[in-house]
Length: 243
Length: 273
Image 1 (tube, rainbow over the protein chains, first blue to last red):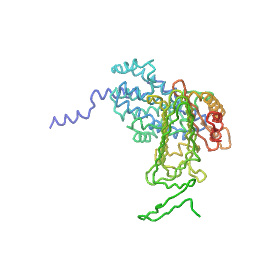
Image 2 (cartoon, chains in turn brown, orange):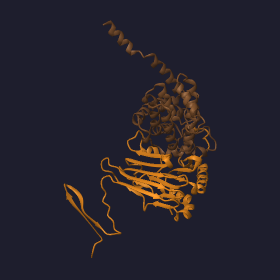
Image 3 (cartoon, rainbow over the protein chains, first blue to last red):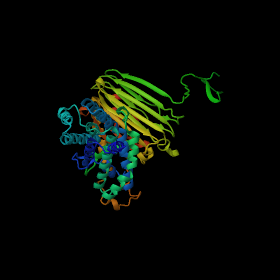
Image 4 (cartoon, chains in turn cyan, red):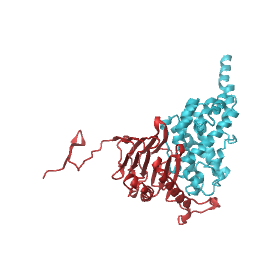
């Protein structure tokens, strides 16, 4: 009887491995990780200058559309990389995504963010030598472009996160970065931004449920207006962001 | 007098059914099946030029149940060859379901012009982005199945956000792909033109956004009625893709006519004239 109660108590406590994983996972989600995410507005800056977004309500709609497009286009890459975090899969996903990111602005942003993330992860998660060796093998080879979504999935997979956790994390960091860009573009204050982020979290979860666990062949874009506007970033006379 | 055509509709199993359908050229009757699927293959040989166009806009009518109209086009373009796919826009009516896939297999010196566009429906009747499903896939592969351009646009009802909400006031979306050595000149012209049009439209950051009152009568604060962006793609930038969102179909016809006019010597026809 006493033994039974002991076992019950123990099974509720996380294993040391699971606890350590939480620390790594939170570090990956934290905006303080120096991956340069703050240089990108996901088309928001262009949307503001095109008068498509002019206040907090427009912003909320914009963020939801960005999340849905992230779900439909990029989650399959995060998922596939998490489920097979190996060099061959990574290269294949990167090549395919490079052909799918037809918007030059979005494509360059993905490469910049992916390269930075790979460099940081290889240095930070030194207990996973595969990260450093994959990076060293590919850096400067011209074989891989270092797109963001596959690398994010790859790191999650090597850390031991499951598919759902990595896809949810990817949506979270996207939401985090667009909302952060909005505060720096003076569209909303920091408190308003935090309120917005919490208010639409359930929608982000619905987007996850809808678009999770799909194959790369199913990847598609669902917001062509967003794609068109983001592509205009290069025509902006004065700009704060790279994309 | 001998008739050129005959159609008989009878009751069969409680449903109106076409039991006789006869026509002599140039008369043609089309009896739609529930959910129709059309598949075409086109090969353009080395050094040849081909132009694929439509007689009028492709109209997709309301679908019965969950059946979908599908069109598939598989093409192969040879060395030094040119293919131009310059259709009128697709218009999906209320509750329509439509899917199209176009695959282009090219070699390094093939040239290609693809226009792929859709309007929001019968907007005069208030039908704006009221269809159930529109899916358009355009894939371009180099030799050995190397993917060069992979794009699928999916507009589906019942998403977390409605299609109309994602399109805001825009009634037409279009994509133009211009690829290959014979298109270098037109690529530069189009890039310049798009940059010129958009630079006029995009204002600098507003000064005090939070306190601004936006009135419809203030012209410079209204959304542009025509938005376009051009992106280079592929090794050595051999391809250019232009994406357009516009409030009127006419403005897109004008843009296409103007930008593609210089293709006349190459194609033997001026597109969208």
